Amino acid sequence: MDTATEPRAWLVRGSKNYAFDSWMLENSLTAVDFHEVGDLSAAKDLPAMRALLSPAMPDKSEKAVGNYAAQLNAFANRMSVGDIVVLPLKNVGRLAFGVVTGAYKYLPGTGVLNHVRAVEWKRPDVARTAINQDLLYSLGAFSTVVQISRNDAAYRLAKVLNGAETDPGARAGVSLVAPKAGDVVDADEAIASNGQDIIRYSRDRILTVIKEQFAGHALQDLVAEILRAEGMTCKVPPKGADGGIDIIAGSGVLGISAPTIIVQVKSQPSRVGSEVLDQLGGVVGQHQADHGLLVALGGLTAQAQGKVDAQRLRVAVWDAEELVDRLLKHYEVLPDAIKEIIPLRRAWVIDESTTS
Image (tube, one colour):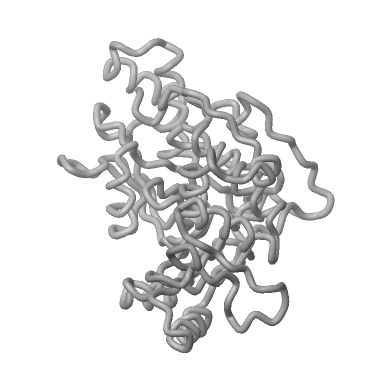
């Protein structure tokens, strides 16, 4: 395989202010938030970028200036038209995939990110569950700009960019590099790392355990325990032909008091289409239940999400991020059997996303 001719893949985080995520998607841009630095066009290489940044960052150490210079040089000079860009959407826990279509430009003004490149955002709603753990580790780097190259990353991310529902893994013959602490910058020593997003990494690890240990019908047992922790009485029908019902949940001792909920659980990492929602809506009406709940680890297709938005009070959806939120909220009261499979421990960490 000739990897030299393949497009490279980049993580570009944009800004700590996640409101700019939507701004980048709506304006077909990838951008970085270094507002203290003016137009980078004159800095054509790393030494020139460092010379440009030093006077603009008098309070930063030489190491920090070198770190930022490496990232901005990568963004302005090393990133090429045709390369892949991945933007983590922090507010929704998803990933946006795009292709670079233009050279670096300086966008003056306030209320915008000043350093931009044009991008065609081809898939703005990829679930993190679609990406294997090794690449999720790299996509959790705190650096604003990182080239992702380990484990055949560019090939794999290109497959997802072009419509693959799940990460295909590395091709045969590509050597794999196991991630280790402090090694989130892949294959490029010039781009320094500010560390790893421990919170995001932990959530991704929890999701990986759920995918591996609660595959298939086992996921409905986990969902039932979370619903019980939220005060519902749940009945899990026998495995097999369930008629579109994985869990029947209700209030009261008998579980038949309002609200009653028909739950369908989809454990696959690929997105669920609108036909599943139609089926669930039909089952809810047939059983005269109050609501339907669809638990879909891979999230929904755009068409399916549109249907949910149109009848939000009738059918609710838990994607992977919502499932993790509820697991963490009720973890202390979940059965020991669940805790043995997903062993968690509380720890206080510095929130690096709010520090400079």
